[in-house]
Image (cartoon, rainbow, N blue to C red; front, side):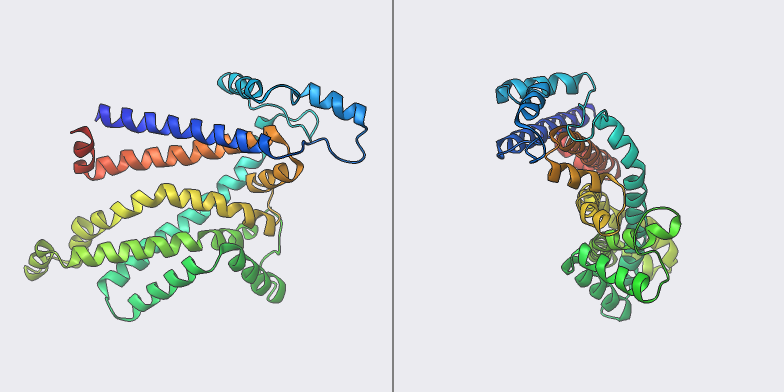
Length: 307
C-alpha cells in the first residue's frame, strides 16, 4: 500500500509541475503585457514593467515565480492595486465551492439512482428515460442549458433570479446547468455496470434463492456500480471546474471562474497563474483521492500496481 501511495503522489507532483510550467510559458509567449492600455503613459508603463519584473529574462522570471511559490506566495495582482492573489482567491473560493458542491451532489446522487433504475428495468421506461437524459446531458453544452433555463424560469416564469448571488434561490439554476453533464455520465456508467453485475452467475443464484432485492442491491450491484463512479470523480470535478467558467459569467456569479476570465482579459499574470495553481491542486488532489479510494474498494488494483 505504501508503494502504491508513493507512486501516485509522485505522479501528482510531476503533473502539477508540468501544468504550472506550461501555463507560465504559454502566458508569457503571447505578445503584450498588462500595461498596454492607451491611457497609460509610456514612462509609467516602463516603470510598471520594471516593478513587476517583466523586463527580466523569461528563465529568471520562471525561477523567481517558483521561489515565491515554494514560500507560499502567489504574488500580487498587476491590475488590482494592493490585492494579493491569495486574497482574491479567498474571496471568490466560497462561492465557487458552494456552486460546485451543489452541482456534484445532486448530479452524482440522482445519476446513481437513475442508473440503478435503468439497470433493473432494461429496455423499459426507466431505461429509455436514462438514455434520453444521457444523450441530452452529453450533447448539449452546459452554457446552452444555462441560457435556456435562465430564459424559461427566470425571464418568462419569474420563478428564480435571473443572475447574481445571494440567497439559496440564486444557486438553483447555475447548479442544475453545471451538473447536467455529470448526471448523464454517472447514470450511463451505473446503468452499464449494474446491468453487467445483474447478469453474473452469483447474482442469478442469489435471486433464485429468494434473496431480497434490497440485499442484492446493497451487497453486489451498488458496490460494483460505484467503481466506475469513483474512477470518474476526478474528471467530473474537472468538468465542473471548467464548466463553471461559462456558468459564472452567464449568471454573474462572483466566483473563481469570473475572476479567472477577467484575469485573462486583463493579462493579469499573477492571477492567471495563481488560479491555475489552485485549480490544478484541487483537481489533482481529487484524482489522488479517487486513486486511493479505488485501491481500497478494489484491492486488485492496489496489488496489481505493487506487483
